[in-house]
Image 1 (tube, rainbow, N blue to C red):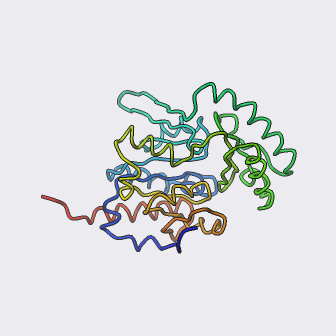
Image 2: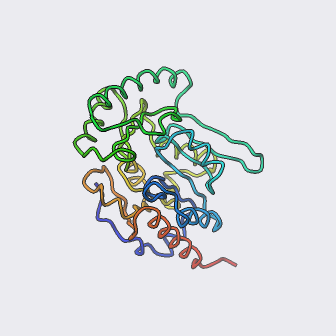
Image 3: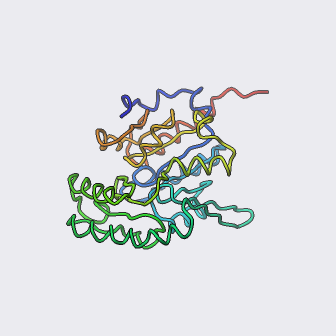
Length: 275
């Protein structure tokens, strides 16, 4: 489960000064109550302007990733919990996409995903397909509290059980239960993209990377990176996660993300410069 959550101000110049890349979740990490606030978007811009690489990883669908890669100040977007990655070359005006599964496997899985969706909706009253399901390529997203009243933890557990019983990987975010056929996750796609696009080894260079998140589907990332940061609402999931972040912000959601970004930029500016 990880050790105690340490306030982020205990990170010093020597630690934060070495960071070259920020990888971050979106929902309830950058967003607040479902909204992308000015302070959080400005934090993304400020990170990029300070010379940091910014990668977004999310359970949100491929269709959203196309938009985010084109219009947000980010270097790449890992979507559907690691199923795909989008990045946009602004000079060439060219969008590129990488997929975790070959096209035939993707087609074969669609009927299986639809069958699981029907079972969940029949067996767990009050749930719904996520409103963004129509623009997903890989996974099934069951809404348990975004656009429906919170169905309660026993129901969330039941959704996970149904998905896992048919061989799906199931992960709980702050708003959805996501299920997919395959062994990929946010970490595996991030590892591939960082290596192939930027020449960064996520194992060798992990001290140069900070990860920011808020919920159980961020656990693999929290476990991997020594500079893993949870926005304050990660406390809502203590006891329900395989790994906790090492550090925590004082503020929740987008304000917490902005809090960390401001600290990181300030600490980098205090680094001694070589002549």
